Length: 226
Image (cartoon, rainbow, N blue to C red; front, side, top):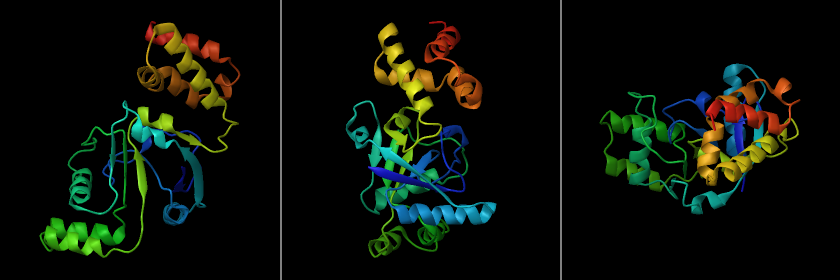
């Protein structure tokens, strides 16, 4: 599935630690299959930052929803279960995610819905009345939130810069970890993407891009004492 991220900057590498908390589905990296919705978001963000709108395209592997190692939650429509989940995540009493899902998919709480959520929380509208209102919401919205490092293995930027070199390095290192240490794919992936070596790789691209993936793998082994 082709998905889109609307912002004021193009995304080369996804940094979950930079994602804001208390969004609809919690802290995570958000995309949508609706190009128009992504464009609207890019326009809104760029107006606030005085930058140009930017749409980054990704390919999402929907097999993630069938993967037994991925904990996914999907909402097909606005309903009470969706509403309760949105309210939990938008609770600003904590900056941490209140759930343990890797990927969450469902409708967006856009401005109009968010206003009614506030009215519900203030006791100005009952839950049954609010849910009845949602039945008549005609605008189609969609979002997917990637909440964990593990989930990012199912989304790849189209025409990644610089020339996909870091995705290639990542794949080779993870595959070597699997072979050398008899790990399954997900533990190896989590271990690599949470390492200091990986953070160094993405923060010092110009320097490390000149090294072979074998040299970077040696750095990782030294760090993890493997």
